[in-house]
Length: 345
Image 1 (cartoon, rainbow, N blue to C red):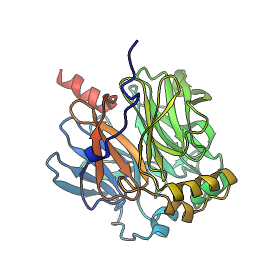
Image 2 (cartoon, helix red, strand yellow):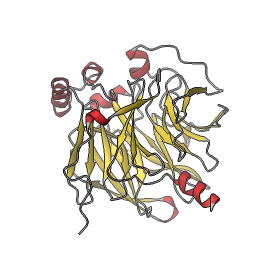
Image 3 (tube, rainbow, N blue to C red):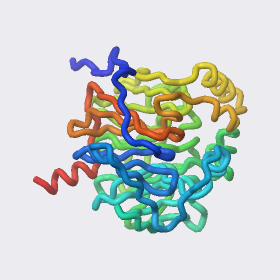
């Protein structure tokens, strides 16, 4: 029987390094095999970070640079362009779930941007959160909530989030009534689609059916993972890693459904106050703002990178640099990696 590499393992805080500086809301990170990183940036674009630490901000051609940095404007009212989830298209350009302007966009590596989707059946998309691509070329988009402002969703725990698929038939909703829909990932065989329901504090999965449809929702692991799960990613053993935003913890759910805490950087007092408010249905932006750690403040996403996929990069909503450390087990490669490798073969 193979021993799970994460059993008994915790991130050694003294081993954590950092890359990037002066970043703005580096929520999601893409890693290329040569060590190049691309980070979503709240100024309205992405930042390219080279392996030697050099970096360059690539702004979207369609927007003016975001200058406001107040908590109210940036996180409650989500003013301006806020690139959130990122994915590579087949050519290495960027698919952007834009939480600020409620749309799915395509941006080339020099910043040229066009909107792919801003409504479904004539209704506004809502708070576009994350996007991924499957091996059939279909795009899968999560929308956290349709509420305006979006923080009303956290206060009311509204079940108005959804998953949409975009294929040759167009865009359509394939799973609705979700609570704070966030990052989504496929298992290696693409038999199941996994998604973080952040405000419900659970990981859900759906069997992928023919034609891009999804089966009934199932819970993966505990019904409550102990915090607001945000980013998710599989490692090669089958553990599903997840960040807990605001609690600023990094957890993993084993293939057997056991929950492991592998990094805890939260503020215990503020996190306890936020948790109590969640149970009592009285979460507010002020309680959310008070709960944060120091390594990756408001830890939001995680990405496996490096040539062996054993370097873990942490994204955040309130950080200005990217922490990283070594994992005892590699992550799964992005589809884009596999396509590049097949092209080079």
